[in-house]
Picture 1: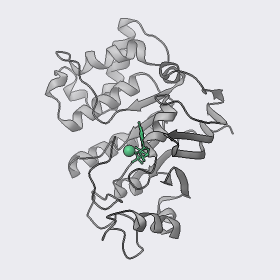
Picture 2: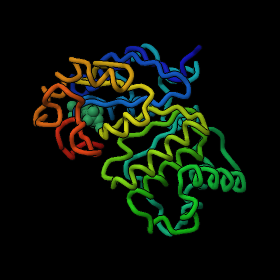
Picture 3: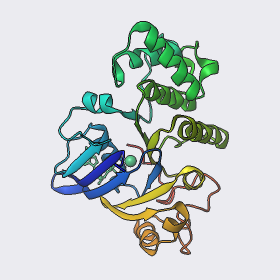
Picture 4: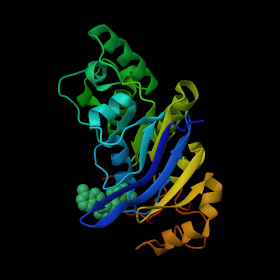
Length: 274
Ligand SMILES: Nc1ncnc2c1ncn2[C@@H]1O[C@H](COP(=O)(O)OP(=O)(O)O)[C@@H](O)[C@H]1O
Ligand SMILES: [Mg+2]
């Protein structure tokens, strides 16, 4: 079967240095793929390439459901079915959650919608993102967690085939984290959306990811089920080799498993998420 997303030779260099280096990756439809790796590994750059926000330096294949997306601008890639959740979504002042999502749905999705259709798409997306109770509240009244859910609702209103998430759980309390995980699980089970998900919170990856890809210096270092990837000697070495990769990776166990739910494989740095 044709994978939903297929990349071959995907490369991005900044000033000669590769941030993403000849990445080959196939993601089947319906899969939740977690991308992990130390800071600077190239995870965010990879997502930006798939979203069309960055132009690759080289790329042999970039297809979504068989459609060649190479060279397309970001809005055409979005229309092809790639939805992105930004870490801190901008909020338009003086709008309600429902209005905010509807505006995005009108022109930001796979097809342009009329006003009524956009509101219907917004209501569905707001519910799917777990924000139905806040639908008529001003967006400025949302917490960080709810603002992320708003970003998710915006992406869902465009009816994406593929959803790109860059550290959606960073900075959440454990209660919020459980709630966000439940939302993502429901999306997979009920909508069948395919997700490429950059994440540092390892227990969350274990709980939800079907598959884990580990990146280091722009390359894919390991690829497999969460438990087997964490035991991979190359993965353990990459984390131990990272500066400041202290106690959490030491002992050859799972990267980032020893801090009770907020695991950050790079050893506690808060600099991620750019
Ligand atoms: N816009 C940019 N200009 C120059 N270098 C960049 C830019 N974006 C990322 N990089 C570099 O590319 C590498 C990968 O960064 P990034 O994709 O953000 O890593 P990660 O998300 O895994 O932490 C890093 O060395 C980073 O400094
Ligand atoms: Mg990043």
